[in-house]
Length: 551
Image (cartoon, rainbow, N blue to C red; front, top):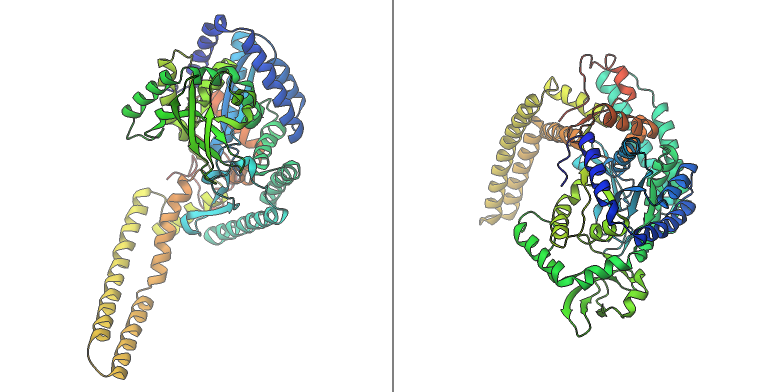
């Protein structure tokens, strides 16, 4: 399904799928696309990204022979690279297909703004930082649990300012540390200029947003549509879902067929994650509660069709929803949204999608959905995943490498592992001595004797523990071990887009991603990016070290 290792193979699969599905289209598909175009126009007008390129793409979407590429994601807080590079892959793929087929090609990016706030990445963004716990500076917004993201407030002006100050301090600490480790004075001005450019997007998005989902989505759209000048079309799932009555009805009408296919998926992938063990009993849509949360509905036979029974996951309100053809639920589709397994079935069929760019986190769901689609004889578009690890010299990555060299004498990972093992052995010996003294303290506490004498003996043993820590450099060794462990975490982390914005400038990011796709085309291998720091490697004592940091 997504065994495409090269852009050319993916383009071939998309072209073949598009050509084979042309005779299956009808006027309803075009009507659905035109309705989608209206909701897309609304989003871009509100976001401030109704650029000429976007307006032209909206008109292409209204054309009968348009080839549609799709991706989707939750609107994450300062999304990590994997979210934004989906748009880059579709952008390059669209140009390739347009040249081959001489037909209009459009990229659609669906925003899952009704997903729960429980997902970490809709409210948390990470910047690599070797000095912090788990090697990350975390930017975080507090959100209530089990609430849809579009029902939660956007960040306050104070929160935005605090985040900005945290990032500014991070830049200053990283440049200062690199200077201390290398002996070369670092110029901070370019990094602060890059941050100012990015932060103007954040502040403008926040001014225009009505809720947290929109803030996150507007940041993504402004980067992709304004800075990168892509013609990617964005739309909220909460708005466009109501155009898919026909597709939702199909799933409900054929629910027991759908249920059997899902049951088979559950049995075959029980140890691999994905759907719940009782997903086959679940109506393929969420029902939205007035409290801002959702209810998961269990299906039951009814005289006129299917009934769904379930409780709101937040307030506990009980629902009994009639999904029969003449039910009122079909007159107000704003109260339902597709579950993860059903989303591709609804959107692929309703829009005649010719390719879907997925993410690594949804790999299992896509496998399972493909099986269900095949069993129900629903056409399933080619799916690609492009999530390489970007190797580059950013401030934190360079600091991690210089720290590694300082503590081990080089950059080789075998040196790091040997140094870590040595430090763990030394720390274990210190811990053993401290534990031995602690055991003696406990024995004295539990023994029979004069209280004053016992206190004196315990204090003496405590002093021996302190002396052991001090003379054996316990704190220094522990910090060195923590830095070595964090150096690996920094070099393997998938950071949020702010790390790219600060180290490259946003425009340069997309240009390098595009160049990698156009010149190499490999969708599986790591990508090597060039930052401003590459020009200073010899000054920083890294002459001859090429190819970016490796873990």
